[in-house]
Image 1 (tube, helix red, strand yellow):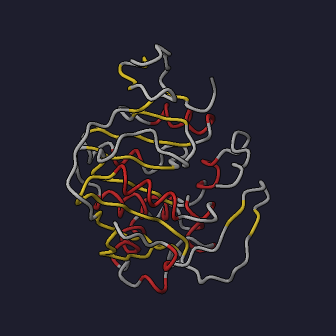
Image 2: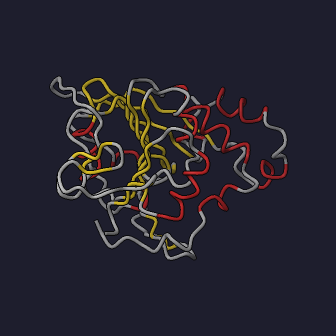
Length: 252
C-alpha cells in the first residue's frame, strides 16, 4: 500500500453532519447482516458502524489508523477493543472473526487484493464480509479530496478473491443528496431507502455481502503486539509493553 495520508487533522464525523438519513440507512443494513461471536470493522473512523455491531456481535473490535478518530470512537463505544494500525497486516491470528465490515474505506486503497487476502486469513470459514463501496464504473481516474486523500475507482469487479463468495448486493443513497439533507429529520426515509435496496443499480452506494470459503479453523481473537506476543489485559505477554484503552501499534 502507498503512504498513508495525514488523517489526524481530519475530523471524519464532520462528513456526516446533515446526513442522518443516509447514516441510519447504512447502519440499519449492516446491522441486519452482522452475526457471530466475533466481529471487526476495518477503517472504522469514529465508530459510526461499529456502534451497531456492539449490539449484534459478542466480541467487537475496531481498527483505524487515525488516533484522533479512535479517541472519538472511544467516547462512543462501550465494549469494543480499539486498535491503531495500518491495513497492511492485521494484528490477529488466522481464523478469528465471524464478521468483518469495511465501509467507505477500500476506495482509498489502489490495490484491494492484499487487504482482501488479509480479511480471508483472519476470518473463519463461513464468516461474513460486508463491503461498502461507491457505485461507479472504472473510469481509471484517481480523485484527490481537498484534504489530500486519494480516491481510486471502485468498480465492483475489482473485489474478488478465491476465498470469497459474493452472495448479495444491496444499494443505498437515494436520499444522500440536497433534497435528503434538507429533510434530515424525516428519518422514516431511511427505512424506505433500505426497503428499496434491491434496486442497487440506481443507488450511489453498494453494500456487498460475501461469505468466506476456506478450510475449517478457529482461534481466539487476541490482538498481537508488534513483537508477536498476545496482548491480554492491556499488556503484551511477549515483551511486557503496556497499552491503554486504544491499542496503538503505530507509535512506540
